[in-house]
Image 1 (tube, rainbow, N blue to C red):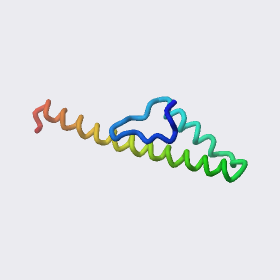
Image 2 (cartoon, helix red, strand yellow):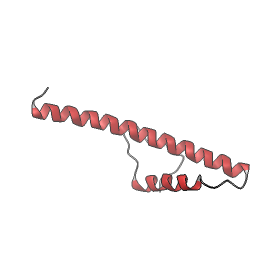
Image 3 (cartoon, rainbow, N blue to C red):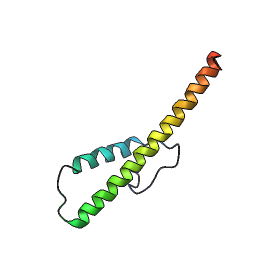
Length: 78
């Protein structure tokens, strides 16, 4: 699994193991942390997960726009 504090490079997509780690994180949010240190660590993981998801979203939007341009060129619409 990737380092949970690592922020993906622009254009990088989340790998399946990272997606599974984020899904696991959401299930861990349903229980109250035992102490403040555990709560802070969980919040830090959540912040990193959100950063990962937003970076992946941005990469997907860029890839979709590029694919749309390529398709339009191929079909002769541009």
